[in-house]
Length: 465
Image (tube, rainbow, N blue to C red; front, side, top):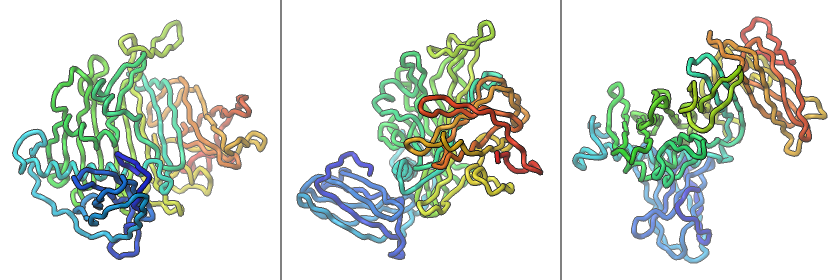
């Protein structure tokens, strides 16, 4: 439950159903207001259509249902007594927002109320989508398979300093490192703390905060003549702090937010580059819920210096670095309901694949379609651990070629977790390259050299028998 206050004395429980009166409606915002129209609490309905709100005692409460692309639906006002629990069942009304006549060039920061109206409408739709999507982060009702990677290259783009890829399964993961509005107000979107350079991203909680809207001017445009886009820029220079500019893109019929992209403004020297940017992708599931499905953040890598054939990472400042690379963090998600039914999948591989763990786990590729997969099982004595899962690392140091690009012989890493029986799968490995498998047993490092074996025909991922 998302809300500015959380007092457990009085609760409003409820279920929201679709217009047919029987199908649960997930991804609906339920907001409680007091008598002065101030928001008291809010929640998002889960896969079962259920929600739970906690409000102050002995207070008149007005309830409203909100969902992207639809007009608000009021549920009336009631006064809650001390320790009262209310249980409601309500049915959604099908009342889409009438599409306005878009005023290209309309701005949020100047002009008449009539000019600002379509911009404010889209900002409210963006807010609803982001609130619903953020509520799905960590929600056990919606599981996912996610890929995150950290790929570091030197300035020439051919020398890979380090490549780390993680695959996780479970609730939808958080996007970027969390930053408070107070931190952003004081330090901006870039800060150098004790030698560590931190590029902050505009996370969903930041994007829905009134501070962000006040801090930026939004201008309406139409992409390809039909897709509403809000471009935003800082309203003013804030004491030389690094800021962000970018755009919101919306579905032309439903007005649901589909993408936020951003770039950093106010960088200096070699940090200034069009690659220093990021994005958040959102989509609506078949259930009607909204989720974040991909995210990416690129920013300059801390520099390194070479001396007598050795490489030293410089954590203090890129000003002392000889080379500057770029670090990427991103994710691609397959959303799955608790019953195992696939709700949405990004970029599925259509090639024929064998009936193996690799086929099930590597149904999408995060880095390149020229990569391969490997699978195997740990020895029985090594697969046991308190949670029943073991962290494995695939490490190699030979040069590799992916998509006709040669990457240098610096450390490359992939990580995965075994299943409860010790089975493991690595996706997105370079083809024709042996690697060293690493894991720990009772604090002792175990290693095993592995050479993948190609299947006949060469059209399917490699895997170990």
